[in-house]
Image (cartoon, rainbow, N blue to C red; front, side, top):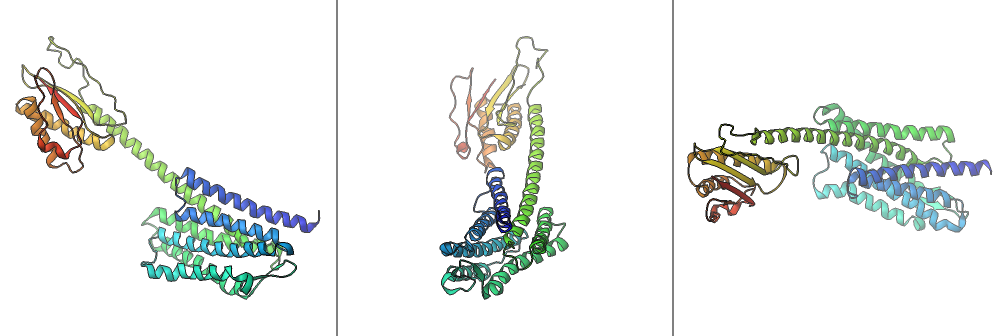
Length: 384
């Protein structure tokens, strides 16, 4: 194997490795971080993967006259996806800093029209030779517009993102820690890309056909994505842990509101009561209560608030207190629950609620009052 063949192989292997790394990051975004493909970060990674694919195709077909069309496809596809990638990178960074241009017209002038015109010129390049030309020997040559339009357009999008990142990191670093970290990562991205490219020039020479800007961008993109995703994962984990801690406290508070000391009435040997509740989630809407109204009447309450979780538990606690208060005021179970129901429905915009029926020894269950129509209903039983 000649030295040239070894260099060709290493060059393509580096591009292939960069493509695989970007593909893994894209899969992580979609599967692990539950991002949608239409989100900017995922689209950026997708464009970077496609960009590497086109450059690999370009490298394989270059200097092969029989596949000149594929060389054009690889080169033009590489340029189009590269420009789309940097435009998305620009929009992603500006969006994280809340600095995206306002208005459809301005967005069209800054993004859609330039990228659209550039893509159209790339598509017609096989006939116009504006950007590249493939000679009869199959060798690709860069033409005038490659350095005068493609490179400046790419640099402008990245430079605008870099300037905004530096400005945000200096002026607003305490306002939003997450956005500030992205600003720092963007600065490193913009420094890392030319550093890797300069290293390529130093190792291969500035006239080498193996200078791959997409390789430098891919390496920098791996750094940017890894850091952003890691910070996102850590922040999400911290929020989950905080929520779990709050739920544990809420569980304890809810449990403490229910009667839990047994025997409940040790001085009343004529009856005994025991009850327990195991919510389906950490907290829920089920509850029970029992208390003496007077020397001769014991109130028993079993209820289920519609819904689960924290909203239902909040409604459960307020309902329990209201039932207790109104029961001590006197009245039949139907009258007590009707008064409670009216009070609950008066300020119940969330449509949580309960319906009631009287259990034995009351002879017949009353109809739920009309005021309950605003509430999602399950059941509340009360007797004494």
